[in-house]
Length: 219
Image (tube, rainbow, N blue to C red; front, side, top):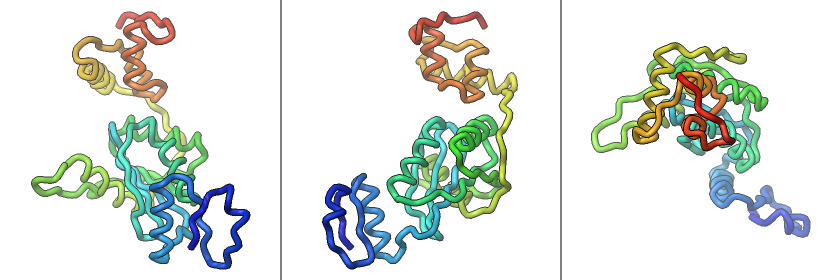
């Protein structure tokens, strides 16, 4: 195996089985290790997502978990594009759990717009019990994402997002908490957050009147 840069690859006379182009350091190391182990990512990648405010993401090549992430809802699609680029592999299927209704719908719609195939998985029983002295939330989300990736789901199309009054109220409360009590966004902005049109941070800034000169509206 030879690891080289894209610029030098053309000048290397290598009869071996793998010529690895260096780009992202961690991605290159991961690919090299998997080639040594005999798992050169010949199989398309399968992604599992445990939805929530910070979704857990698991990347599987065959039966092997090769990467895990936890990112914001709006970062899911860019993260998966980065994964496909770093591992020089196609993503065959993205499987997402059925919980967290609004965030699941937001993620599904964004992924479909990006051209990905998405399956909705019944996530019942995918979240494990976590013992003491372990950072519970992150571990549970990641393990749930791994389990979701291994369960065949139903192909899903674009989801309609119409938040309930309770869901809007929760988003308003989150805005107050996130702004340390300085701002509670109005309902119309909370509804846009719920639909995935803007982030909570953007809504807070818009409410304050600091983003694009938008004046806050009444609730």
